[in-house]
Amino acid sequence: MSDTVLLCCCSCPDAASAQALAEALVGERLAACVNRVPGIRSTYRWQGAVTTADEELLLLKTTAGRFEALKARLLQLHPYELPELIAVPVEFAHTAYLDWVRQTVGG
Image 1 (cartoon, rainbow, N blue to C red):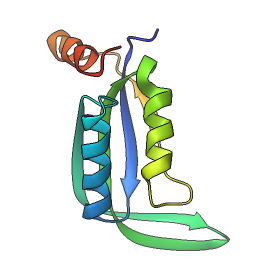
Image 2: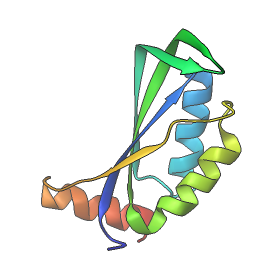
Image 3: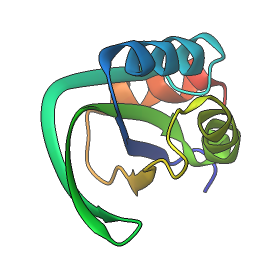
Image 4: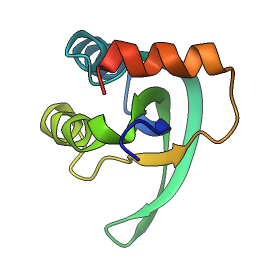
């Protein structure tokens, strides 16, 4: 369903790129809210090597109907060659909050 609320995760290399993404996605009504979680440390395999990096995690709230537009814009703006973007449907939440997310992103 297009009005299903999604919680999306995306890591960023630094505070500046995280803030720029958050402002653009909320400003363009692709996300109702973006929480920035600084100070995460990620370990991952990239181009054949194990890498560890300091990152900032974004928690984005949107709807299934706005996800493809959010994804396209995030991929356009993100500094990583292969940005993380994971979306999970919100099954249980405060109904009034879910309604606010839907109204804010318009779909």
